[in-house]
Length: 193
Image 1: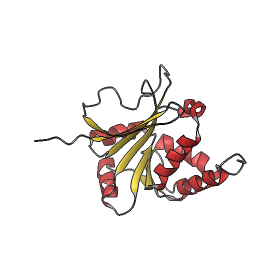
Image 2: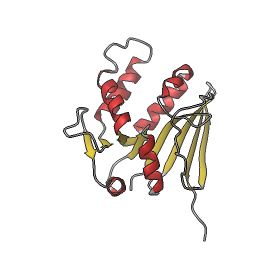
Image 3: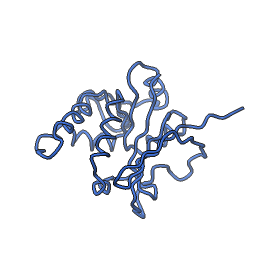
C-alpha cells in the first residue's frame, strides 16, 4: 500500500499560503532534501490552485536557467513533469494541460483511498491546503512532513483550518537545516487499547 505524504512549507505561525517568503532561506541542504523527497515518491496529488501554479511553471522551469546545479534542477523538473499527477477540482475540465495529469472530480476520499491501494511509490501532496484538510478529516494522511521556516507572517492561509478536529500525531523524524529551517515529520498516533 502506498503512503500519502503531505509535504508543506509552513511559517512559524502556521501560514502556508503563497510560499514566496521561503526564497530567502534557500540552501543546497534544502534543495537536496526536496530532491530526495521527490525521488522517493511515485506520484503527486494536488488541489486546483497548486496544480495551476505548478502547470504554469514546471514545464519550462529550466529553459532560461543557467545557474548552479542546473543538472539537479533538470532532474527534479523531469520528475515533476513525468510523474503521474492527480488533481482534485470541481471546476477544471479534462484534458488537463500538464502531462500525466488526471482529474479527480468525484468522491475525493474514495478516489484517494483507491490510489493508495495501487502499486507504486508514495503519493506526495504539495500545497493544496483545502485538500489537506479534507484528507485529514477522512484519516487518509499517513505522514505530515512540515518544513517550518523561522519567520512570522502575521496573516495568510494556515495549513489547518479553524475547527479542525483534535488529532494526536507522533513525531517520526526531525531534521535541522543550516538556514534555520526545521523539517518535522509526523504520523497519526496509533491508539493503544
